[in-house]
Image 1 (cartoon, rainbow, N blue to C red):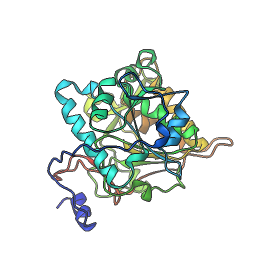
Image 2 (spheres, rainbow, N blue to C red; image 1 turned 135 degrees about the horizontal axis):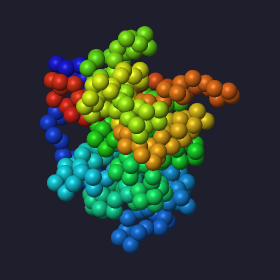
Image 3 (tube, rainbow, N blue to C red; image 1 turned 120 degrees about the vertical axis):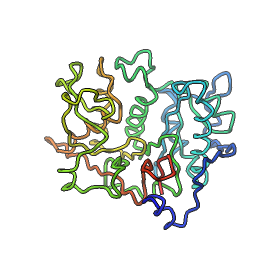
Length: 326
């Protein structure tokens, strides 16, 4: 039995290991949203004028909010049905732990919101984050919904909310906020998939994260940038890089000054004009400089989430293909 399957069994949690297609879940819209303006087709939208009102309506009494950015557009027509099934699955599990009502799903793509609306899942057309047409960074233009998650996390943090970002393929088995340690500014999902534990700081000093490599690139600041290892075609241009090896599929942020400075820096990083860097690689590269305090600003209080509760399940021979919050 693989490590994650063993943990699932130990928790006596029943999880189907075969593809599960959830029935449509009607997300009960908070009554505070009744008065919000709609688009002509009945879809909700969020812009900078109603942003605080929408966030307040969705957040829990402890100012906790789950953020997800969605788009079927980049998946292509052949994959949109699969993507809808994934989000229905995602919504079902959030509903089961009474967290769907605290979930803020946003999309630039009207077709995505219409599809979610048709199965009773609340989706907001994104009129708040910068539109892809005006984003200078190459990556931000090509994957705007991946860029926008950091914009929304920054906006929500500015308003004082504790943010949990979840990819739409996450399966939540218990309330994830039960396992969030608010003494940290940022917590994120471990991507050390080939290990059955999160390495400590001493182990990290001599264990290489296999996911990334530092690669020579004349368009990058300093002439190099962190990339996914699979893209490092010329191994002579690569070097090792110490980084957290974190997945950006699950992460928490607390509304602190150090969190805001980090998110600010990450947004600027992704908006660099010629930057085509994967946002997850950018996160792992950018966060390193924020771990040391400077002047009156302390270092970012940061950790990888314990895999006893948050697991990135891509280990073979595990039969699961999703991140699971246990």
